[in-house]
Length: 126
Image (tube, rainbow, N blue to C red):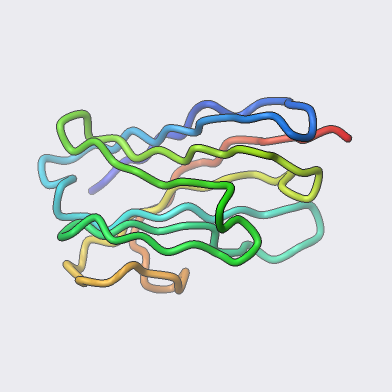
């Protein structure tokens, strides 16, 4: 069983920055592909970013490319999402997720992830 706990959300003005953290339980965090998704009010949950366990390869949604950066610290069992140049349309609940299947590519599909955090709210004011 893997437990994921997100933190770092909050209220920020447009153009500002936030860094989300996701602390994971489990002794084999270094073997998990990790991802971030988000869900805005009235919308479907959507992919934001992912990072592999093997090479640290990353992939991003087009809407956040160049503004968001996903990274991981295996020594701390933590994955991060650095969000810069935030826009009001980035307002959403952000979820951390883990894929424990040892895939060697960044995972974009929600259905391939095994564990999810409870989410953290990010609100960007205009």
